Amino acid sequence: MNIQILCTLGPRSLDPHVIAALDAQEVDLFRINLSHTSIDEVERLIAFIRRHSSTAICLDTEGPQVRSGLMENDVRLERGTRIVLTAEDVAGSSRRCTLRPPSIIGALDIGSIVEIDFDGAAVRVVATNGNDVIGEVVEGGRVRSNKAVSVHPQPTLPSLSDKDVAAVAIGVRHEITHYALSFASTAKDVQLLRELAGDGAHIIAKIESRAGIRNMDEIIHAADSILIDRGDLSREVPIEHVPYCQKAIVRRANRWCKPAYVATNLLESMVTSRTPTVAEANDIANTLLDGVHGLVLAAETAVGMDPVGAVAMIRRAREAFERATLHEVLAVTDGAVDAAARRSAASGRPPHRRR
Image (cartoon, rainbow, N blue to C red; front, side, top):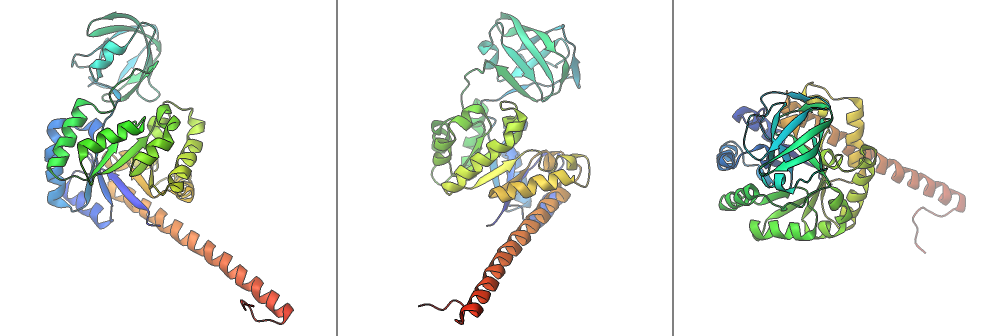
């Protein structure tokens, strides 16, 4: 099986020399994450990548995802204080924070819980007022720019944002053939993106929510391939259950011959270090043994200190997997041959003789 490498491009890798080096590592797909890319940048990024590489490009939608706006710097919210959550585009502080998309403000009710950033702050809505809501901090924590936000109870948002629709139109115009659908909830979500992307597009459905897990069978059938984003999934599923969700999704995808990819924290330590941990190497090995068809690097190559080194590590892990599984097959085969030889010697018949 050919294990593919998908590589997210960002500030640390959007450089001609880095892209050339990633090409030399035989990356299979360059990913543009629309959650961290403005619509004004999409066309320029496509042109820039194509000037320096022939590697295929994937546009990864932001989907029905709520995110924080721009913060003045890393802000810490203290329990018991109040903060205004707004649809207006403001510089965030401990007193005021933008949420995107703007429609999320109207979907918040008194009592809604808003969790901002991984391991960040939790805010309970205590009052609503047009484009703003007032929240009380019930769990202190930090809030950073453009970070994922979870809302409970979960509001209903369109599967594709207005920015996604515009970005897909740009992609079609530039003959982009790969599109990833974030937070796929139903087969209809997949079909909507397929209609926008056109015939011949390869749709990667990302299963990263409770709804996605509930409807994984229909999503797998509707998509061309599946991507398990363990990070966002861990916001909705207890983290100790995520490995078992991964195994279940990969098993189903393999059953129906749909390629499955895994993302998030594969080499998290390599965001700030040139070497991974043993636990990360073990995680990658087990993920490959589950039967995945591709590994996705995100922060490691978008903002990490050594994007090329991270990809090189994935290549070495892939080669180790291929060698180990080949040797295991040979060992089993050799054992079977030896056993057959012993049986034939005892019976007086040559091995593998047909009657």
